[in-house]
Image (cartoon, rainbow, N blue to C red; front, side, top):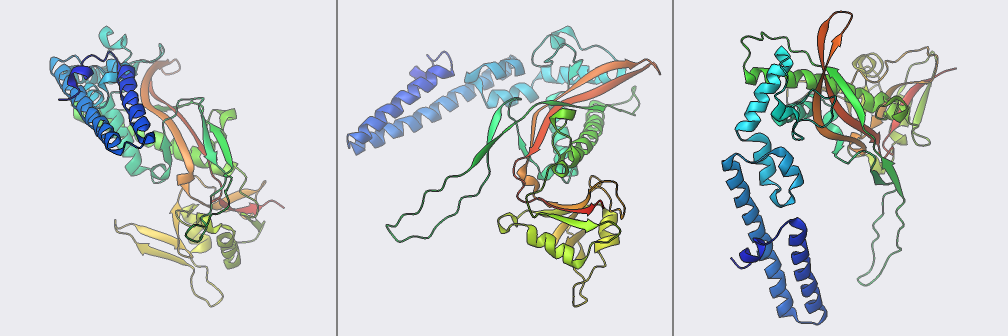
Length: 411
């Protein structure tokens, strides 16, 4: 191999990047001098170097995995063993299996995690955490959350570090038709920013299965289901009703003010009408048509919208049988999602109360570290040993352009 002797001498990834950048600088210089053949040859060298470096690191990772030396903690700090080592170190090997069994005994029997694991950064991150949930179960939790949580699956997931400020766009650029050599006005795209915190999301871990006979697979599947179900409910509720940082929660869309002209008010004592539905559709900007859907309680849809007709007496709501056998509702052709997180319609309210909304949840960012830990404490009232799963989460709507709210207006 052309670069193998050089690659073996690298002490860390920074040295590799310095060598690679030097080759790119040389290629750029050749391009500036008009030496196209040498320039193309140098680019070919860079591609060859990348392929050989990747193969070398993969081979090294496989060797270490066979020796049983790959650990998650090392993977996260050794930049020269990315990718393959991460997968092997986290999910393969006898050590991971031993920790999974130790974790099961900790949850079911209260047996403390062995010191080798408890003192390792790979398995615990803070002194008050009893045990980190193994990656095998984390994967099952995330997979179940994606498949079961109808709203959760629509959210945009990110993994920024807490406290990091992320730029957001407050406007959409417009393309312009021009002649062959014509130009167009440069557009200034308004940019905002959003900062994510880390809020603790906790849920009680309940494993109602026989301790003496449970297998590792059954335990992991049961725990994943219990944790995922609880966390889905909390995250989805917060996406609608979260009070934000003041309450150590993500921000909910119903706690934000919709853009001007995108709130449809229904007078107290009245019911929503066909005209109101048309007004809601008209309030949604054309740029946000794709992906925007209705959200309301099932009872609200069937009691207030399902029998609604247009001026010609034709129903504006439809309920069809979906591919999975479940009914799919639509209002003026726009999909309706039934959710318990939007308040029910009430003719009399003490304050302005939303009962239906439109939104594209791809414009809502859920930021998490995707690490779930287990903490144990004693309930002194019942003397029960309680175990809680803890996850660090934050979420914010980054673009409210698709938000249209129908609410009962307090008189």
